Length: 142
Image (cartoon, rainbow, N blue to C red):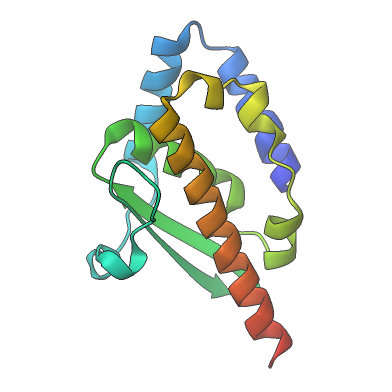
């Protein structure tokens, strides 16, 4: 599935949910079902700066595609990380770097987050893109 197709799938899922309490519950469930980060990566080196909650993110590249794992000490933030991982994992650095993240506005996610959580969302996206940029650079230098 392309990043665009995954975003469309998420938009359809959120459209099928009722008010935002139901959507928050969906995010919480998404956080519970995402791939868990290895305990070795739950340290300051993998901590995302700019998040109110503690969020750890790791990325590994296999066969030219990046796979992300994450964890957070806050359940909604963990769900947001799970949502982003769902969108970005198993894609190439170029696909990640060129992705237009229209789904965030279309599902109303940013407008239903506190300013600090919204900043955390942006920080998570930036970190994912930094990983993609680093892996792209590494591939070009091989």
